[in-house]
Length: 264
Image (cartoon, rainbow, N blue to C red; front, side, top):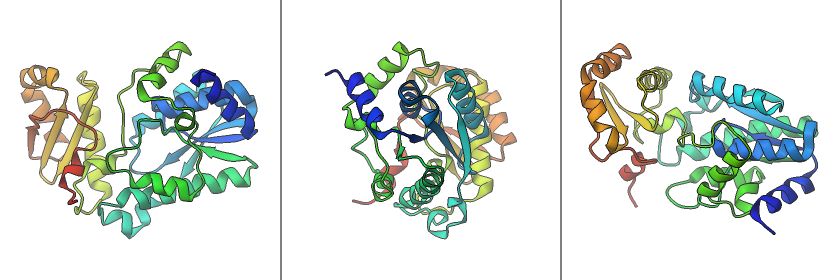
């Protein structure tokens, strides 16, 4: 049995499902296959909070419309939890506990048999306290269960015609703030506006790491010449977002770079 068929079989057996949907390629593939298998018995649930950039929300809803599947916004309240705002190394656990708790509660109330997420077979390393929260909330991960890696997810998404098959990996805005630095709505908004400004300049794979007055820019090394060529415009854009300084991280883009600050 190939992995795509296994994925379909897993979803078919669940009957009626809600998908924790962010607009990333992983959760989009789960939502697409769920809709293809189950039709109106599948729904996407989008967790809406200050840590989700408005442009990501709009893009996620547009992709869902192109698939034809219904989505529902669910307001989550992790930003009201002081354990999340304190921003310790287990921040993601408290965030995901709230998010999955809210989504699971909605799914149960509406008669859905399972809540699914987009975790794939490669999502087992690095620092992932959110996975514990998912297990505690009974979230199923059909991509992981079917053994689909990230590359295989992208290949299948492309084969199925999903417009975001090559979308760069994203993460919540709180991941841009160093552990131990209190999360504020102002900081999240600064990061969102700064990253949007860079996206509007044509950068795709990027992060703006928030270090008080300093915006630390992570882009792929091959984009370094473009950053330097547009350094004045970039600096002006960062200053318009409330930063005083803009610094280019010579290590380049990498997911989870803030985890380097965690002690073993």
